[in-house]
Length: 514
Image (cartoon, rainbow, N blue to C red):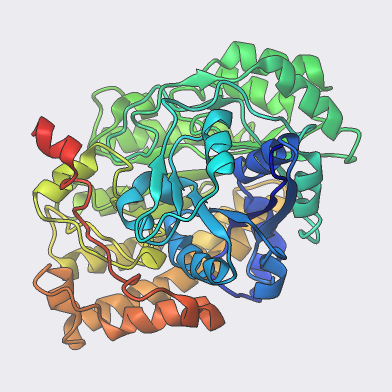
């Protein structure tokens, strides 16, 4: 007879203990779908499950399942060190530990030193294998992966008890995560979904979930977690339109500009979409994704700005995403063009990411590793803004950070913030833009970049580390990680602050293929 296990599921959306107001309001809305799926599958297999979405307000005692036989932890790379510390604590209490999520896919070579199992793509067969064996694997854990993403997942109806448990932590805004597809048809070489085949999920389940949510909320808010929502546009929107009345659910989704044509945008607006997050990335690359073809530089800025202003006429909130420091960029022009775009398109909120190579995440990372350009910054800093772990091809570090500071300062200057407020109609949109601009994403990030730029001049540990001449982590970063982990710093395993930045390059499979 199969043993009934006590199973803990921990979804890490915070990097450590925090009482920040933004976190208390929003972190529960950042919950991932797969931890809820795994929790549902485990219950369906007959096991006892305790699920926790960690938002930074829970104590270690609230995270720790009592007498757990096995604990599954879902982590992005920025929460990986917290995951390592928790795994050590759970193992000390006698549990077998399992890591899933983006970090497990990106850095399995490192993660297996701290977990008994490290899971890539996970379907029900992989889960059953782990639960049936459920054995410690030390010093190195087992790495398991399905051939592809699952063909189907439990929807909101099936995983409702875990969804409800999470959204009840959010005091005001409550967002439900949903998926309509896996993967992406575009092959952006820096993206974790570049080599994941596009796979739509069943539309009947989508319709059932949307109808169900209208019985639970007066006006639900749904965030689509698709890497690129609406690839099968007519089929997906037809399903939404059939399931629920127009504008009865507020939707948020990330879509490429190539999908966001004016007829499509009008249809999204009628369906209830209130926010879209298109990726622009670079003014000198990825023209297909932004629907600008061969246009580059100033011409691309002109086209994209007109396109985004069109979207804003129909959908009140647009965040435009940029990656700073890409190899296609050189000199002042990319940054000056971004400032020009901000001036032309004040209603859009600019989201800036520093170029980051997440282990195995993308094909381009192998090139960076072959060129010796990837730096071993601790995982907790790899959140696209605290550290850039790829030495830029066409900039020195001081020049690069001077330009980053300049573009962020321009984007969140009082003048631009005022223009952004005047360019948006809804009060809620204005409040969100203002809060983001004057908090950690705007002024807070500007202050941080200024500190990094100063330390490149005055901190003797910075320059050798940034240039790859030394592996000695500057104390500034060590203290930052320690502060973020709080009391769980004492549970961080020895050596966890360091990792082999070229581990993917040195795997047997890569060596054999050259």
